[in-house]
Image 1: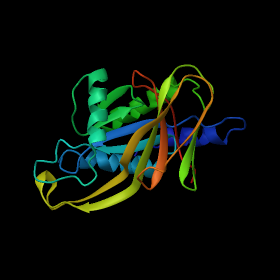
Image 2 (image 1 turned 180 degrees about the vertical axis):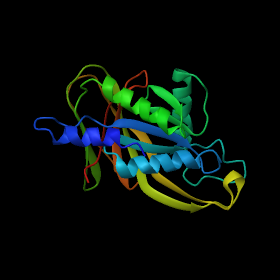
Image 3 (image 1 turned 60 degrees about the vertical axis):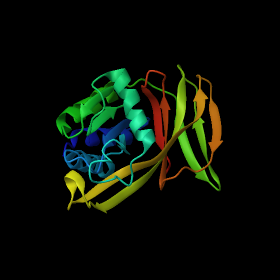
Image 4 (image 1 turned 30 degrees about the horizontal axis):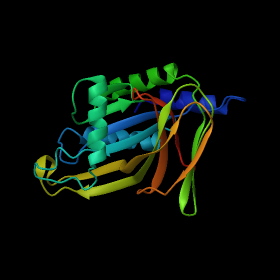
Length: 227
């Protein structure tokens, strides 16, 4: 496991007057039916357990579902989201793919390459607007601070961990562990540089995250609910 980025983030957070930067968003497009995906799934699990400087999210796509096993966590919205990235970044849709901050796509099992992309994203990230999401009785409150640019405010619900016995397909007979599994994703507003506060129903999923995504796909801000 690559510890240097985590150590650097912890040191930065401990320095007086040094607020931690917003997390780099790591989106894994995966499927329980894909035999090449378990190493990438394991990498995402490592990120969820060991890194607070990234926001790892697993998007389970649908296009493997007719090949012997239907992924119970597959979402049409995940397939559509990856297709949108493919149109912007090139290379088509494939699994496992990791997209870093909406700006670059990588083979998800190549840890060194992905770590380098995370580091590059951290160095390139400008001071974006402050973003927060909190859960209350009957809904969530999203707040976005002032800044430059425009973006869609996207609410994500995800489950922390699932263990699945695979009954068919390329991974038949295996037990797979999936982390930060996206169960729902939808826009809840638009941001145009001015402070924004909006509320929305609690999404499907155990935990909540918010993404601030520009029209070109780049992530301008992100946050997970406290806790």
